[in-house]
Length: 100
Image (cartoon, rainbow, N blue to C red; front, side):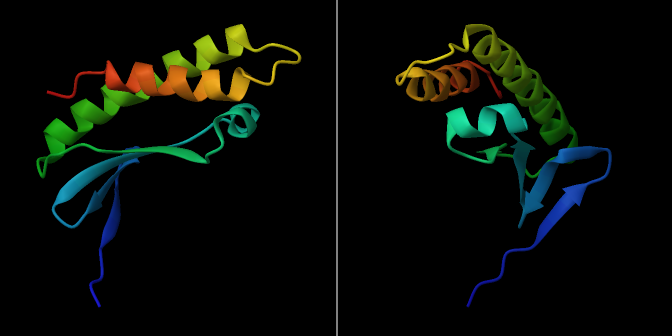
């Protein structure tokens, strides 16, 4: 049995350390959870360095909030394809967020 230690990181609530590597975790806004079919955004920050992790987490947080705003702006009243579109929009924004 392998246990993974998870720690939140002080002033960066969306920054957690799992073992030696930092992770980004951000809860989705409640109005978007239904469309995105998930509760949070999770990404490895691929670094054991706290300062680099904080910088990468700040970039990802900004990218997420940008995506949330774009999704809300395009939110239709009735469109069965909107959840897939919203998930795709979030993934595109996160992919385009350079972590290096």
